[in-house]
Each structure stands twice: as structure tokens, then as C-alpha cells.
Length: 389
Image 1 (spheres, rainbow, N blue to C red):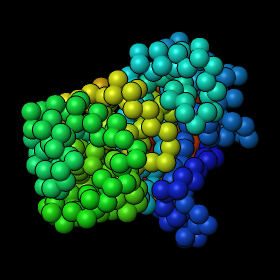
Image 2: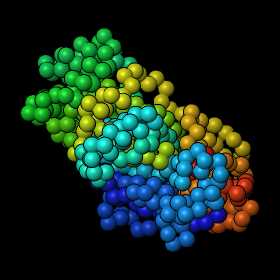
Image 3: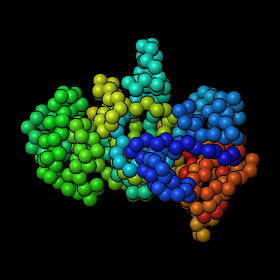
């Protein structure tokens, strides 16, 4: 086991409290801290033994990844783990599947689009399925709801210009409804959103984020003139309790609103945005990758593995996530995992070890384990999350 140092991404929507609290630093921090990355993604890799984890893996992939992972994924860690801390909403977004990502990346490479260009949609050739597990209560928009229910909500706004959208939803045509909203003429958007904000009181309230009424009010204030405010009414609006997860396969429109969670995903940064953002929105490409079907059961409950250990099932081989929680009753836990593993302690004090040795971890600390290390053993009192294959 080797210690990791992990970078923090300071996106504007981030919290000034949560990551600092986990790491035991003064609160609030000097600016927003949105995501702490644990992995080898080239944009913000962790460091190990004083150098980038990405560089370390590239120089010794057989040792740091193991033969099986190296043969399947090349000289890269195939997953990325994050601590996400949202003070306000992220963009509405979806991710491509493996074929779409490979094709899109190749097309932009042939076209000579710089990888750092603001209008670039595919920065790598990988897919990005992801699992988020709530660390605090976590509010999110996850996949399309029943279009008939969405039709009722949009109709309740009583905005004449939205009749086309209501009609499409009423007959179950999600593609037409989303296309109509995302292609709304830019010059007409401010007036549309003013009407929607003025009529938000016509929407029902609810216990999750104030229901549709509270959601529209909040998003319209944060993103004036953005049609994503209306698109949000087409999505499942959820409040996850700590320990509950949401699984986001390719092509599902989603947006995270407030709270802290542990994310694990395939190691990609391909994001196709649909609104609630000042960043580039590529409507044709987003419409190409979206799945225009309701996502009826986005929530994943934890599944027990051994005393003190739970996991969340995902139908991809790129990653697995386990939570280890130890106290005076369960003071030790053991895990047999495949391939390279990352361990991130979020609370308390724990020691994690394998056949090569052990490291003590406190809240905010992380470690990297080689596949040759074999079984992991956790002792102490605290909580940690482990990413693996």
C-alpha cells in the first residue's frame, strides 16, 4: 500500500465546507472546492511517491495494474474515484457509450479540434458510466421520468409557448420534447424563462428540494435564460439518503443539485451538456447519444458483503465500489479484490494493509494498492471507500 496525494477541482458550483471538513482543514475554505480526484486521469492525477500516478503507471504498468488489467485497458487505471461536493447544481449532462465515445473522439481528432477547445465534446475515446453514493443527503436529477407526469408539470406552468412541448410529452415523445426545448431560439429564451419564473407558483411543492416549484425557482435564479430549467421538469427528482446510490449508464440525462457523494466512474471526462451551464452545449450530439426512455429505478441500495462492508452492483467491468465502516463492534474487515485498488478514508482513523504492508489513514487520506498485494485488511474505527475492478 502506498499513500496518495489528491488534487481538488475548484469548480464554481462547489462547496467551501465539505471537502475541508473531511480533510480536517479550517472551514470555510478560501474558495469553492467541488471535486477531490483519486486516480490517474491525466487532467488531475493523484501523486504517488512524489510523482504523478499516471506517470508511475505508464512506467511500470505490469506492476501497478497487474497483467490482466494491463492487457484489457492498456497502461492506464480504468476507473476514477471522486469526492463530489455540490453547493449548487451541476450542468444537465449525459455520457456516451464506448462506441459513441470512440467515434466522436476520432471525428474531432480528424477535424483538428484542439483537445483543450471549449467547444470540444470528446476529450478521450472512453465511455463514462458512473455510480454516485450519497455521503450526505444528496439531491439529484436522474434520468427521464414518465413523460405523462412531465406533461402535467409543464402544462401547469401555463406558458402558451410550451404547448408543443406539452403535446409531445402527452403522447410519450421525449425526443421531440427535448429537441424543442434545447433548440429554442436564443433570442426568445429570456422571455420564455421570465414567464416560467413568474408562473413557478403554479407548480406543486414537495419534500424533495421544495418539489417542482422549489426546483424551478432555484434553477431559474441560478441560470436565468437557460432552458435547462424546463428540461429539469422532465427528470426524476430525488433525494438520496447517505448510503444510497444512483447508477448512471450511458445516454441518461442527469444533473446533481446539492450534497456530497462518492463517485466512481470509468476514467473518462467526456461530458455532453444540455443546460444549466455557461459551458458549451452541443445539442445535435447530445440528442444523438440520449436514451429517450424513462429511467424507472435509478436508485441502488447498498448490498452487504461481510460485516462492516457493503457494495453497489453495476453492470460494467470497469470498476467496483465498496464501503468499509468499522466501530467498536466491527473492528476489522477483509476484502478480496481484483486488480489495482484505491482506498479513501472519509472519517475516523483506520489502518489498511495487504501482503506488502499497511498504512494508517485518517479522514481525507488515500492509498493505492498493487494487485499483487492480495487481500486487504482494515482495522480501526472509521469509514472508507475502496475502488477496484
